[in-house]
Image 1 (cartoon, rainbow, N blue to C red):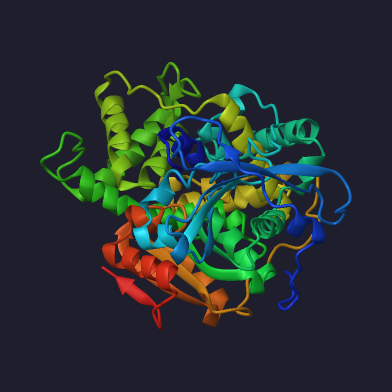
Image 2 (cartoon, helix red, strand yellow; image 1 turned 90 degrees about the vertical axis):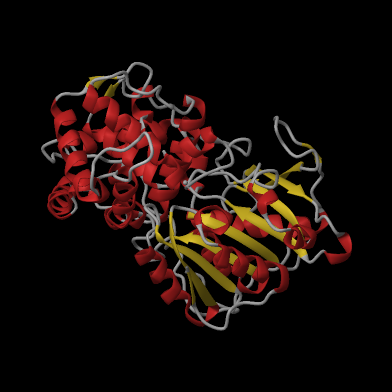
Length: 491
């Protein structure tokens, strides 16, 4: 779940309504267009403008308290060719696309930038929108703590303790807004953005968790959609929609580690770990097991040691993008040789506080999780036996195991009822959103969608880690509306 800067990428690594019921434009939304001003921050395209939209905190009580949603845009570059607005939906939960019109949006081909206003936004809870924080201790912001890695012996006791501690902090520090951060609320906010833009229909490019948000918007507001691109796709199961995000790493790592092993055994680069690809996996497993019991001090990191789970978490982060393979290889080499560890790349605490709060609220509010430790003990034991690289983490307890609230409404159920205006693009080897989950979304959408599958490695396909064939297919759809008649495989 990668943003336009390195720090945002680090943070991201750390994201049913019956068809036919269309929410009409409200008078207030239609009559109060956004007021655009200069955006705060540095390094932005000077054309990017920012505005603030007021939306209900609780859509069940639209006359109650309101919150602010920060919105950005770069206007279409050729007014005579303008078709409408293209909303960029970030991954996460906890990601923001507010600066994406200046970042990834500028990678779009000229024909797309001519046709659309590029729209970004900070979803509810994400600064500079009305923001959330749980006020967690620094130690609880470690990525190896936020992903529920079990103890070296497979115990989940500490994970359950962490879940209770973090849930209590979020309940006391997050305020009423903590209860109203859901995928459905994100979709409702998007429709308010559409109305405030004065658009009858909205196009979108959603990435990672943003594919679930984009699919939810298409399900809840089907007649408000124009051209929808879903990139690096989540499993849409309405009960497992959030749990599947962590569970997917079992398969995602197995799909991707062989690619890392081939790279790490290839001659001709300074990060070579072994003579053959077959040697890399046992080398990694032996090192992780050793670090479980003999961690290495790592000043400045969080935690300040390289233990087995920190190494495993670094693996997850590095498999996200082949360009990050050297990060994992350098860490392995230093640990094996006993040389100085690389300088740690630690996201700032303030950003992590916001990310963790929004991520926890979304995941836990969308669907109920098991609360008994026995469920997680069983799952972890099964996962450790079958998928040793991920050591049981994908079936372990997140904060939701102790979340103080139950979901306020059922999760979105993605169906094949609605306009046929969706294009999915997916890499075959994606550690965070593997092909197996994407195929579930493709099946759920049925005739509404066509899918482009890239013979490629890495998270985020379009204009990032995909193929020229895949990029051209998506660009043509956005610029002209022309979609392949059937699913496409790109090499």
